[in-house]
Image (cartoon, rainbow, N blue to C red; front, side):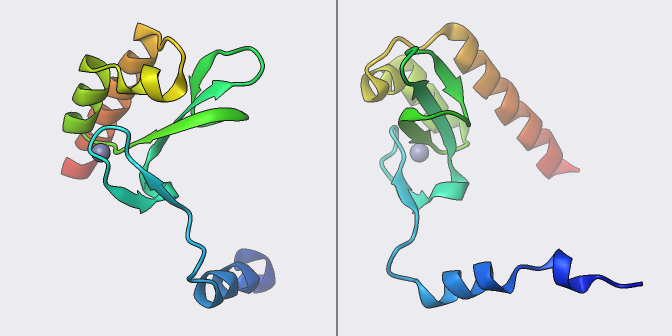
Length: 109
Ligand SMILES: [Zn+2]
């Protein structure tokens, strides 16, 4: 039995095709290049706790390219902290470095 109707959502594709004027573009906090939202890592200062975390949450968010140079700049110059107006814990950078290492090793195989 096939249930192909559940595998695809044509409406979502249609929206993308017919709505090119409103892409989800974001700017990297380090290199300032603009790309679609999906290509970035998102870091969020969660409201109202003020906790800084990755990917999820409601609040002020910053976007960064998943690459070494941008992560380095963000950490050295505290770009993340400035952008979020919060202190970014070392553990968050560690998590990002780890993620970067993981994605690099995946690309090689
Ligand atoms: Zn960047």
